Amino acid sequence: MRIRKEATYDGVWTVFVGEGLCFSDLSGPAADALVAAFARRFAEAGE
Figure 1: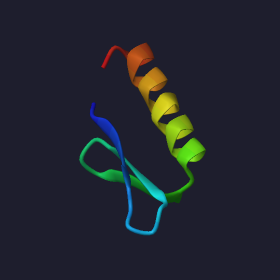
Figure 2: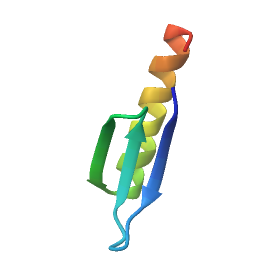
Figure 3: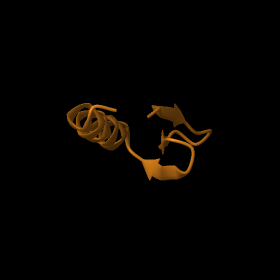
Figure 4: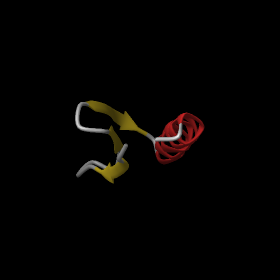
């Protein structure tokens, strides 16, 4: 499963999980925490 984050033009972050899940308007630390949480979850599931 692909997890990535991108900065938007106004300085907030968006996190994309797979092809259909998107979290927007995040602070940098919140985006990092979300990426880490999904990465752990997918690692535990063996994906």
